Image (cartoon, rainbow, N blue to C red; front, side):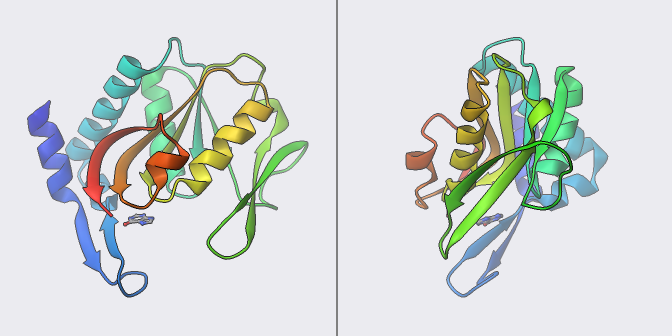
Length: 178
Ligand code: HPA
């Protein structure tokens, strides 16, 4: 409900000049300190995902690191599986990888090859959409694994950082200036 969304948003904190000067950092993690607020947040995420993405959803993918905090709770309530996308060197076995440009240099994402079957309906979950670089790379990794369709969902979109251009179809529960 709008009341729940307002109370969730009221738990978020703003940190000027973090982690560097000029950045207004939005910290959403305080929502997790209160189980009632956290439960409402997961309910709102699940309701939005059910409303916007093709059903049934087969798998939620969470991005390292804060996608790991919200993705599994959302997956449980959707009654679907969860798999992590991680930075290099963390996952064992056969992996699928994608490399992508960051502000400085390249980075790599990995997923266990067996986690994704062709034709699975996937929702990629992260906490914040900022520049969109990681969410776009994760989408490419899913498409490489022949998952279809692939949706993206975040709790907070930060406006003005280019994320909307890189991941045009991303669903966001809240939008704030970046
Ligand atoms: N909050 C959380 N994560 C972020 C932010 C922010 O403001 N900007 C880039 N990543």
